[in-house]
Length: 118
Image 1 (cartoon, one colour):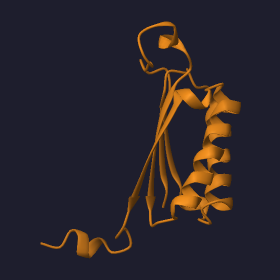
Image 2 (cartoon, one colour; image 1 turned 90 degrees about the horizontal axis):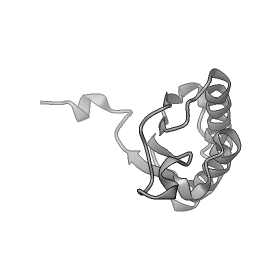
Image 3 (cartoon, helix red, strand yellow; image 1 turned 90 degrees about the vertical axis):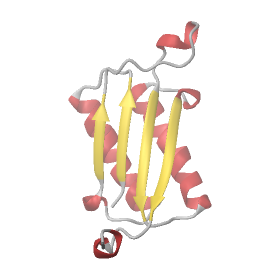
């Protein structure tokens, strides 16, 4: 189950959230080979988020956390990364230099009894 959380200084409207959610689902399916029905997303828009202190202080910026339960390998994540940058550029006018994406692969999601065993 991929979990994608977006924090941005852009005031998101419903249509933008929908485009991001649908675009991300397509990438999850096409690039990661995972069923998007299991994808979970969270969007936080209008956050006081900035890059630097000068003129770039108020440009559209976002921090995206991608948590994947199971691996994919470097090549897969590199392709996903490039596609995410393009999706956010088209949808929110966030240039790649202003989009930070953090990836985390979590193993053991399918074995919760072992994770929480006391």
